[in-house]
Length: 161
Image (cartoon, rainbow, N blue to C red; front, side):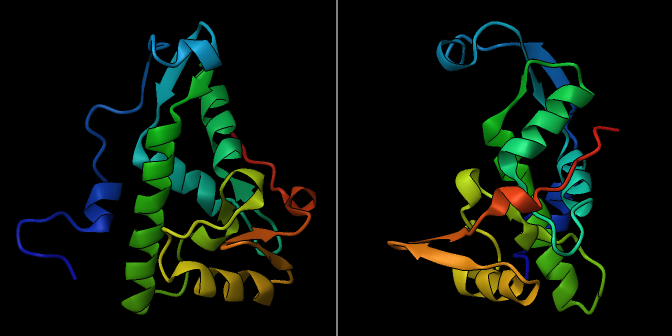
């Protein structure tokens, strides 16, 4: 439920604020990204890439960033906003699912770097684990973090349309 005056996850997902935008690489990113350009994608672009991932497949935030960079002919995509927009998509999908919608963005198939489950996604780690295991993936704990075993073998080819 959304508080009065506060945007819903769906509203956040549908707010573009002049995005996408390609700009020169910010100075603070150059030490690890090098020279070039950075795309700040629109939230719906991230959602659309997450929707491409079919049952049995997986993707990562890094793969989404690569697809966005390719789409916009940029050196890289912003890691912070891509992660935030994936979170918007996940929470909007969970809200839609709670409202009875059957086909939603399969956010549980989007992993962090190294195949790690995202604890910030709706339902938390237990729900994500159950959904992934129901689709045939093996999830393994490493300390308090959870990872999909051999996730690389299940990565979807994202189309940078």
